[in-house]
Length: 287
Image (cartoon, rainbow, N blue to C red; front, side):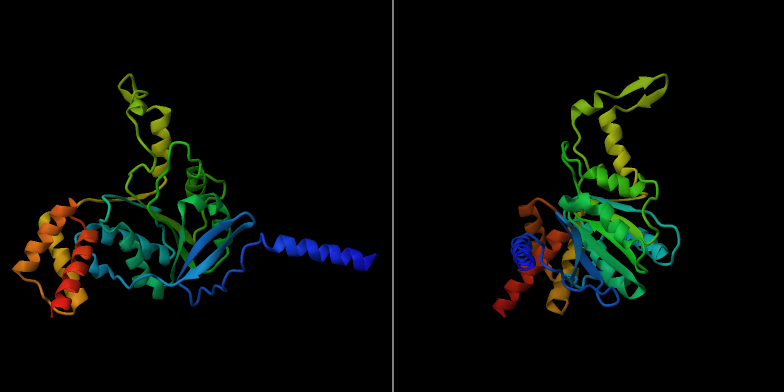
């Protein structure tokens, strides 16, 4: 009877094993500086990753104010001083995500660790934060390109972790998010129709209050805007020098950089990088 039961249990385990997630690689925070949080039906795990590039703060042109503010906030956090969750919002390709990566490259030796969470995995954010609560390292939990649709309830987990639970987030965890939307949720004309005056006070409708209540939980707002022409050209020149190893900037490069931005309809740090890749690659072949 015992042999038969053992055989049946082994068969059951063989069937269940196919549904279990693969064992994640060993993560060691003294060695690994970045990880991805991957949620699965049985919880979630951290997957160590190597930072995708070595972008530095000095490489990011045209966002000096934003760099100073986020660097000051992050250094305070690493020193155990009060610091704010941060929302980086604004024009596409303006350096929001690059700034977070540059912070990690600059401050990893000072103890900064970065965990990226996909929007679809935000439901598991409370479990992740609880997991990090008793860990000695200091973590930025990072959500890139964050936005929600009107029927998306994942933002409730984010609201709860930011400032909605009894215990609140642990002191060794900050949340940084990037988004093209200042309020993260879609806005419609009908939402503003609910706004009304009571005496001399303006009262927003429930839909507007819901959007504001989410973004208000980020104590540091940093706005990123499209580059003007001179800032764009400055970024182009920097990346051309960076990729070529020499300052190969001339009137031809300037003219082509302006033409590239005109054809794409945007002047941004991303467009400057893409132009530099095209320009240096083409010129290198010609040589």
